[in-house]
Length: 72
Image (cartoon, rainbow, N blue to C red; front, side, top):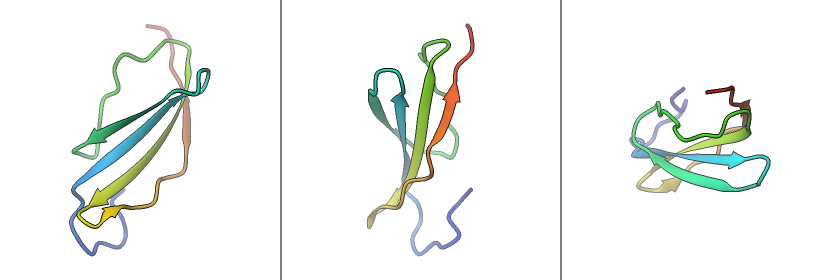
């Protein structure tokens, strides 16, 4: 959902994706409000966090969401 308080337009989003087994985190810049993750390993648990940013800098990150991929 968009932020409830908007003092300036959002320029983009950052997605933080962590492989829970290895602890390896990737940071992805996302232009829109949806994104298709590709190249994930099957039967793997990932945690995701999101944040919006504008020309003043980043906002607060979202709560962490944990998901598990299925087979191919």
